[in-house]
Image 1 (cartoon, chains in turn yellow, brown):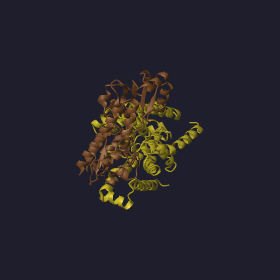
Image 2 (cartoon, rainbow over the protein chains, first blue to last red):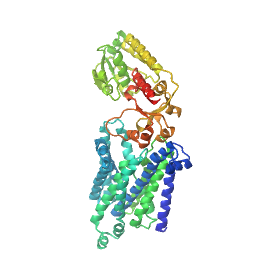
Image 3 (spheres, rainbow over the protein chains, first blue to last red):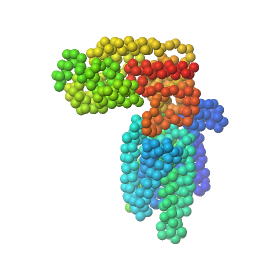
Image 4 (cartoon, rainbow over the protein chains, first blue to last red):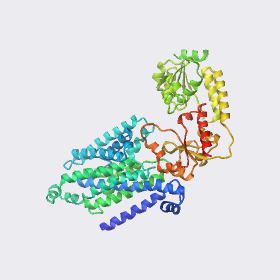
Length: 329
Length: 263
């Protein structure tokens, strides 16, 4: 498929799912009235539901999905390893730890940007550790082992902080931070995450040329004038921005950065630069679809997003490990 | 130990009573003779959920663990229906007499609960006096009204109380229509925020906040709920109606005051 056509199809898919996301909900508003309320503000209660409850939910699903798809594609391109995914290797988990620490210490209430900044700090530490432990010379096994260690540590510390909280509800929210949910988020959260996602997305987008060059090998890339040190810094900063901001709002959602690039890679002809844009759109579509599904399957139970993405992603992950092993990498 | 417990309960009122449930704590504190109640649960001393925190602090506090309770050598342990089965079972194996008080989830059951507790403690006269006080208090707070504002209870995680609950009965008695019950919700449960907004209640009633952050409580500050609350908002302390004891009259008085404000 030609690349512009692919992007067009994916954009249409995202637009369709975005509209569907706006029309699904327990209030049972008919589509025509829902749109009238959203656009023209007809009906007090309907407008409140559409603009303050459903719109932020749909926007956040698209933004966070795009972030995860993009970050996954960028990390896989840089490490030349299809298993690198923000959720699996502990970046989302560490971002969640940062967010939980900011919330429970009260720093998040002290100034507005503290929550996404703390989550980003968590993500920076994790990306840094992963690149240090399993950098470009390390194989798949090293990457996965480092990821397991970082995930386990972040998960345990998150659970500890929540268990120590004086708030009786906090401990029950361990599941939210590990599995993610977009239920009852608001426009405040959209504005909180958006600037970081724009900056991080722009940073990751600049990696395209370098990632293409890297497919020829590191020496060839260096002769083409690609600075690997600079790329690494951009990757760390960009991934931390998008994953940190997203996780601070929705908790850690896994597997999107794994599944989406995997599906799209053959379609874009294995060009990492093209995979970046395609994966961002694909990630948005996948998370929108997952968030619609959790509302249709068990509408009143706040089913966690990570449950659905893992049900799709974990079998694929096993398949990828199997294939990697067969190829003797 | 087994013999000891049996003799004490057949010979006369228990002399060393330990309560390990917040609701039995409340009634035991109201009814026990001086020195009879040895210990109450640590929850009873938490002002956020216990209406008698100051009184409870005078007693030794327990964490409801079998070993700890057994060491207090009680001749009667008071537990509730939600007390850990393992704790109750283990205490009984150790030969301690454990009695479980069913919780009143209707106002009309409260006098019976009081008299049951009075009989267990050998304090029938005190129980009768408390029942009289409760009935008088209830009558004083009950009044007829034509105007019935529509209210909803909104707690962390969008939790609310529907029909068949004590909270629903108190809301109705105070002159409110509970929209969760109107929507067909029975017992406690959740009502999605979208539905609450669409039902446009006249009053949103919440509990108090707990320290520390939780995403569960964040729904109380959601912009949609704040917009809804511009209509009117009220708070009733959780402590006052978490148990079906005479303390619910405090919640009822608060609700009656809120109704008067709504007009």
